[in-house]
Image 1: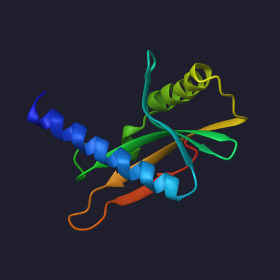
Image 2: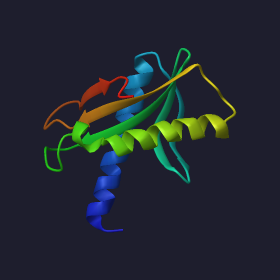
Image 3: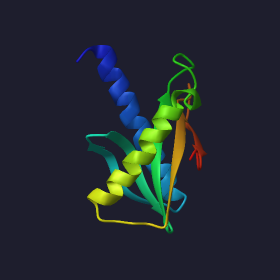
Image 4: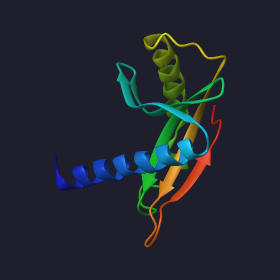
Length: 122
């Protein structure tokens, strides 16, 4: 792995940790991190009441590479929905509702990271 790839991986892991902590503080229950199956990977799987939340986390140290919101394409949203269905089958769980959320984490030059939680992309 190159130094750049390792740096991106570390940045992503940090963002997922910050996002998970933020969402749990908001009252959600964290069910799983980085769940993988043949369809792909889900950053965070959470529960909020009777709602399964499939959460994509996008972390940025700057504006290069576009905004976190721009990185979540219609194809990515469709894949996340399918991953949520696959997660429920694999875990023999069926909640009445499922939604896809985005947590955008932006590193600050100083101080804590800025966290924006966008509910219900789908």
